Image (tube, rainbow, N blue to C red; front, side, top):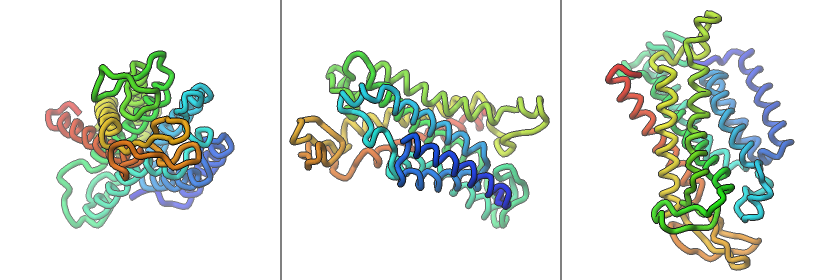
Length: 316
């Protein structure tokens, strides 16, 4: 099914290893984040192709860029990413687990069912049953929806922190909140949300475009046969925007929030300024990583729903 030949494995390990080392040296990831990112990347590459990995890499690079953009200003607001912006294993898992899981689930479905194109290869799997829907295309829609949600959410946070006026609580638009508050929204944050969705959608649309066949006689993503480039962008936009909005709603309502006993800041962390923080509201066990996972799942659901709806009326 997937390209598991030795040459592909060697190329994947070499390229991912170089990217991981560079990311660690540039303080984009911690040591634990490096290992987690490598595992997620190698699974996606080997079960699908380098093109699927490249789409995920675009998320990784653009979010890292904006995490470090004007970092000192964000730090002065008390809302900068910890460890100089380096992402730990928990950040990587919260943002990479869903896209990887969809790829694995699609792989299993096609292998058991068989009898259809699978990530660029044909006549694969055990052929034990007939799959009544395009598994690869549905998997791709879910993959895009989750990635677009995580990209939009990260950019909305990192760019929204630079908004000239305080953000407003999404559940109470008349109420302003400090920059970095979970559930806060701003004009810059909304622009960043659309930007994040477009980056994922356009990256995927370019790779899947039939233009490559016309120009060079090859298809970069031959497995995406029921997915027009325009539809790819629409699916990423819808899934990412809805998922990011749900993330903000959860942040303003059920996500656990604490108050630092040293500086008085409201925070998502159970400790701040090296001291335990006082619980304020929400669910103690519903942290930011949990919010990311659930909002990504819902963003993926919206993306799949839109794709199937467009496919059903002949517009996919």
